[in-house]
Image (cartoon, rainbow over all chains, first blue to last red; front, top):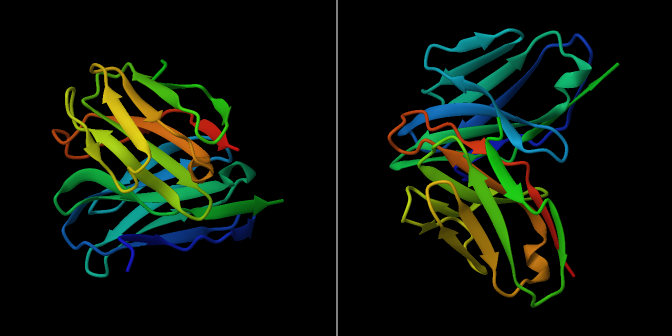
Length: 110
Length: 115
């Protein structure tokens, strides 16, 4: 089993839709969790960290489920500009370096 | 406002040629990283430097060498390029293990093609 797994998608949704992605991790000792956004031919950029109690930033909500070992990203009221690849990153288990998932592709269409 | 700067942005090499990718960060970060990203493979760590003066292998170090020249700069060298090294290379930096979050910040990437 890979350390960090994501459904590659693509998730194809209309504008205004709500979409959610999950990211599972195998190391139960993982401590820190992140979502990055990567536009085509650009570098990954931090979207948000994921806190134990869950956190929200505008239309974006991140959740952590330690029991089932996954994090989620919910995007409400999708915009065309949300089209990108979303990478999860997980840190812990003896290393301070996050391990990245392969990313989930989101396409928002008119 | 530069963050992480890497050069060159694009490079075409012939098999067997050597080259060095340069990277510098102005955020006073302790740790620096080199990743490669290939379709379907995600980001894979090549080498990292936890702090000035130290370097360690990541997941895919074969065919590469690195130098942490000072706190700001971390270069990646391909001694004898192979077509399998055609990829997008990202340099990155972070505060390091002292920071519980250790958010990683990426450069804009270097597109390398080996023919």
